[in-house]
Length: 238
Image (cartoon, rainbow, N blue to C red; front, side, top):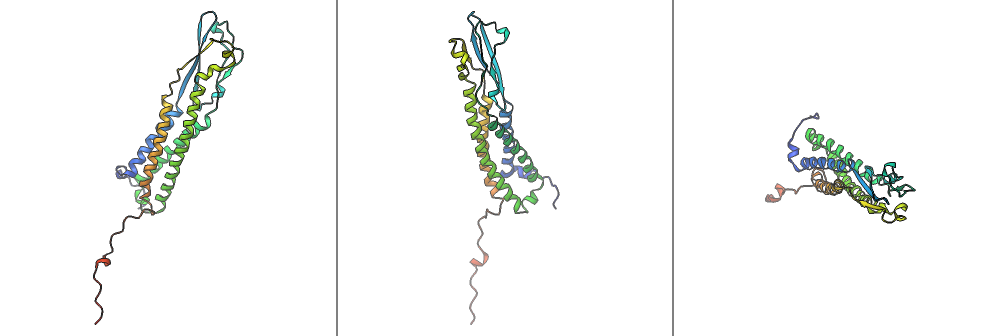
């Protein structure tokens, strides 16, 4: 029989249960990174004694080099002048989009694999090629979790620097001492979680690779003793 046959049994086995966890944590990975939106700000101290807080939003995919402070809005009413726009440093879209896109693809693959496990396990275990393909894809995904998460972790460090106190090192701040003060309102907790989840996914897929490997022809269970090995030799002819 080659048709769909629903069986929830594989979910109770390590093979299916780990795949379900991989599906869940892939959602956490792309949701915590792709859904992020934060703020950074500069507090300006005017010569008149008034204060003005300058807020800028930044968000996924983190093309920070397009976000600028300047010129001053008319409502600032500050005697100090901000002559030239000061842009944040860096474009981290490649690392962020790589991480999120890969997590989405993993999410889709997990859905396909769960459908295969729950509905076509008789075909999966009846054909030698499907487990091998699943094993190769699992190894590749494990490696790409390491690569994508490492790249995103490095980008996150640079994002924190670019949206941190370094934004007050612009020309108009340095030429007017005491004019600019950095205010930290970024709240990057979800981005930190995305990195942790990314490395956890790598470990989860590395552990799951063993159970997929056991389904392949490469894994040979210990062979039982041959019944002829214990039988007494046949008597020689007289």
